[in-house]
Image 1: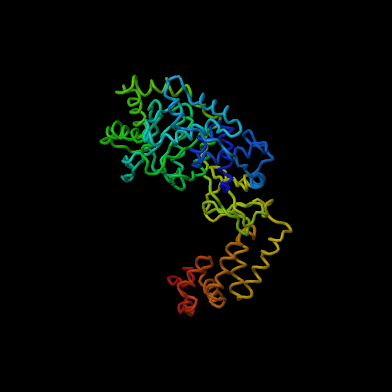
Image 2 (image 1 turned 90 degrees about the horizontal axis):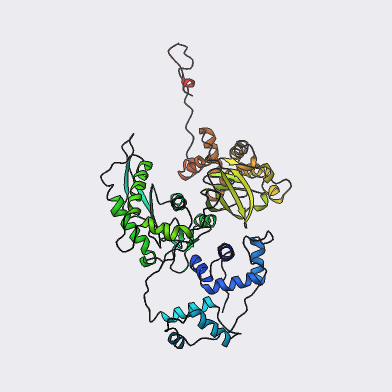
Length: 514
């Protein structure tokens, strides 16, 4: 059977969940939406290379891991298949267990026996035809189901009277039904992730698993078999040492707790607040928190006690502790290094070492910092800057005698522009002199000179001449001149100031308005 290749991110997540979170191969497979056999294969290959702990040693970076896993090959193994019908008959007595039957199976087939986990999985697969549906039993502290309510709440701006809608986030513990809810202005990534962080603070701990819907903020690509988690959402799970297992699309039974929790919040909180006016998000969340106390303290009909008493009895004692450091929202995105060795993050440009030109990096963006990684290694850190079109450059990132610096230099851009025409050369020189470092203008120069290929050098020269004459010297303005064909029109004649020779205190002349 051909080897299935997985991404380096998923490979490292397998190792983190196996050795850091101590999950079984089946639990890891559910979290990452891959088969348990793939988890077993890569775990065995990691063990053969001496990787049996988390975090990894410094010697194992992304590049060395990829090289080592590509060289290593899994060894096929022949397994003895049990007689599942006989095994089912032997399981009928109350004293019999699958563990005992597996131990006997291993004694009969010591060289080709399944592992206990795989033995159980194979038996349950065979048993599906006789048990097509099964009631879900939730372990204490294991699962937290999260979702958004369908209806929204209205918030009125007291100064303008503008009405905004707020989304209601709901989280429900599987064993106790203990419920958390809060309102946010959107279902965007930051609100989605930070709602989880505030929910963990509310619970006073972290569950083993988070079961979300296939929301765009949490799951980048929804798929029944292999959904891709958003990197920022995955980093939240790593920070809190928990596992995310997305529900299958169009399978509401996978998250029935969330569906019921959403319905209860809509009926017992949102319906009670429908006639109350709210003028801020904080005011709305204060009222939701007050009604949550009543909701969680209310006596349940089908279980003894309340959600709060069940939570304190079942879930709270076994929740994982909160991390020592508070979570800071970090947006993760892929960026590409341009020839000016800068990357673009929210319309601002940050420098990286020039040897990474044309490489793809991973940017981690917080409220204060922009940290850039290449193959898992940190290559640059900059204070976050919100200026559109600005540049943040570390002089140590600049090339000294590098091939890229020789190929792209101010002299080369000026020579290229000089071949097109005098006006183009003048405009390129203005671009290069407009920045503290000429390298920061390379992108604009390339954009200008590339217009000669699209419109012809003669038209570009005419457009630059017209732009200089009009004072429209930005790249976008030159592009507009070419798109609208203004370069083909003659420049308007300069009108003579007929009043210039008349001197009078009430006559100002044209120069007054410049």
